[in-house]
Length: 281
Image (tube, rainbow, N blue to C red):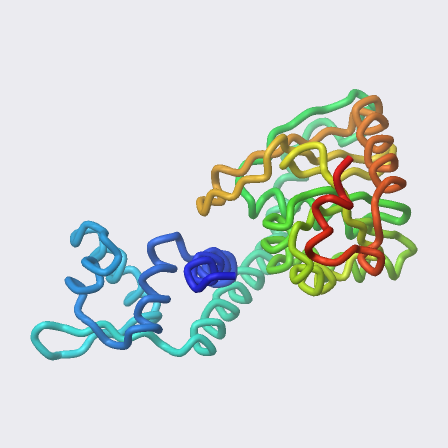
């Protein structure tokens, strides 16, 4: 992997872990690599409009990710990555505590104004999930409640983003209650196998996927699917459909089972130079 590819991967990971947008990630990473520089020099290095760069720096200063000197011109100084991670964790923990504290009260208020009790429905539903965070949250809940077999078929890029979500922890919960998470992924580079193993699916197999999309399916329960898992850095452009239609679920579940039978386990994956040819249909 080239240095530029490593930088691009880090930009995406910073967005996922520290809740940055793309420019915030690039600014923070550039400052870590270059050391203190002026906002004007930073805008020039990144080839970004200065006004936009200044606004972004102000946001990072407000979040205590960047500090500025009293000199003229001012220099921008990034905090250490360990401290940035600590701030991100504290912000998430505060958000979780706020939701927990107000959640019971909100449920009670909703119950008090609800005229028709919930009785469930057997009518198939189809919905659109927008935003990678929302999609991963629904997938995590689906995995947490799974007591049988659930298939995930997706790209290596999507797995790399899921790894930094709550999904790996939910897989452990799923396995404790008797469930299994079976991962199907397409890998062209043998060096990425160790990374895929870190995802800790119950079992992982390598195959040629029929598309660059994302499939998460549990038989007779739920299907979350997109025709193309987004590689766009803007996670809000990621969309998936979610349905409990038994007909749709049955077809996709059968597809995953067929792919599973024709796939290869990670341990049986051939050497790098033969990997693409061996996995070809």
